[in-house]
Length: 73
Image 1 (cartoon, rainbow, N blue to C red):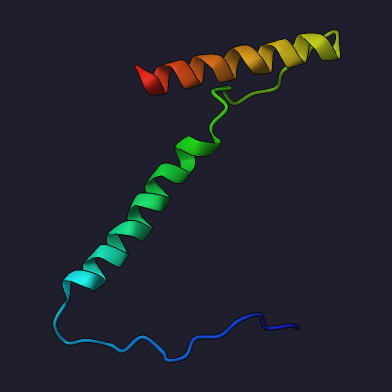
Image 2 (image 1 turned 135 degrees about the horizontal axis):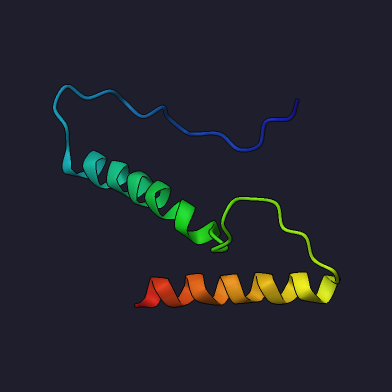
């Protein structure tokens, strides 16, 4: 096992919440909330069978384009 990096000091536990801690926490929540949207291809779950690789690629592109258009609308 190889450890990369280290913290100079451990974050201290506070009795009262601070604005800085709230900002850091909200940044983590925001990142986690958008993660699912960032990786979505727009394809529904299921088994897809295609006659050719090109047909599969076209289906993937169509689904991705629809998902991107839905996000911007």
